Image 1 (cartoon, rainbow, N blue to C red):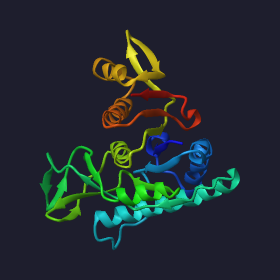
Image 2: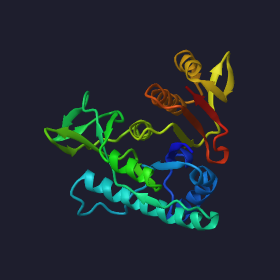
Image 3: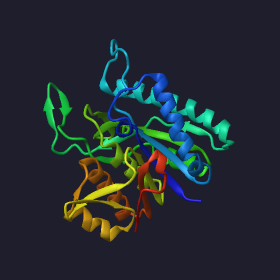
Image 4: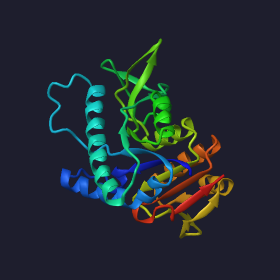
Length: 262
């Protein structure tokens, strides 16, 4: 049995489009159906990226942090509801546990505007504040669902935390969580079957590859798109910090896409 963080990049899977509830639920059912065998035989935590999920109104919401909390809570509720249906259909025993999480981000190179911290780039995650709770749930046999859109971003101020109004690199946050809870595997579920690079003017799919070889590809080759390069960068970072295995694949190709190992 392995300890696995499954990062579902739902924005990428749906082509950065917003879905209605019925479409959202149907797509989630398909994804859970495909990863059910991984869930049943491993210690698993789910992380999820869907920044195109919006509330119908922002009236009366005091801050972005509160808005993020409402968004994340809503997504986790839907994930838990859909999973419980799949759990029944597949005879799974693992209970899902939503964990609203905060992510401490790197405040360097950020600007101030109208009293708010802003950045042109996705903030780099430094720590997951609920990491101990997530680790304990994994140890007890639960499946935490957490780090929606990378978690609620916060900055440290003295001995407490304050709101950060930017956004987090959700894939990097999932990789960081994998390191913090000592997972040996990071499974990235995205829109493409595997990582592809452009080599000698030809598109080459990457299947099984060692860390050292992928690192050479990262610095010396062009990837099919920028998202692929970002996910490879995150994967290499996870392996450098003690991880053993990374899988990058679509929901229809679970653990049969790109496999990077230490």
